[in-house]
Length: 128
Image 1 (tube, rainbow, N blue to C red):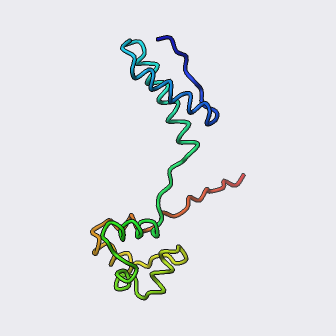
Image 2 (image 1 turned 45 degrees about the vertical axis):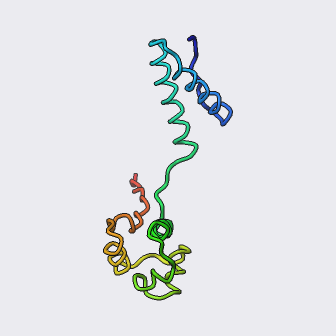
């Protein structure tokens, strides 16, 4: 199959590139393997820049854990303190204390690193 690679600059290019990958995947010509790999890498690079991944926050993680374990907000009160604290944490208005992190870690058997937000990167300025 004769095919050129598509350099992705917008969503229209993305759709065309995905269609090309599907066509190349169905090809029996071994020469298309390199084209397939190259186009897949171009798509991946575009998707990473267009839709960057972000780490979920504590509220999202707690909501997920509640769904997975069939828990309500009331079930989190013994772990977080009070109903208002549960509400504040789940709305993102309050950070988890280390005591809360420890209780959640023990209850759900997860790493504390998952619950502690990473510190924003600070760039050091070099004085001239």
